[in-house]
Length: 107
Image (tube, rainbow, N blue to C red; front, side, top):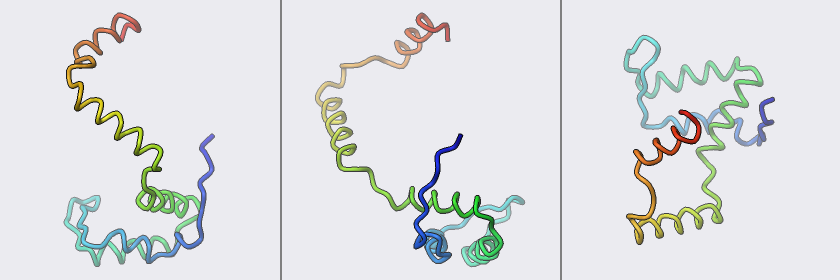
């Protein structure tokens, strides 16, 4: 069962999605370069007819883009990075990790 997504009504606004697309160019399914205006028009039209599932997916993408790493998580990452920089030889090489996994799990 997929986890329920939190929906904040303010994020369902089309402008939020369109703002994320500023200054981007993407390829469509025919590999033709689409300009930003074309992409915005295509998305605007799509959103007008989107069902609840699609709106939830788009909303989850926006949430991901807007949310920062919690301070407590950032602190842990910073501590681990500091430790690694101070102890670069502490740890295992990728070859050692693969060997351990093979021995332990037959992978």
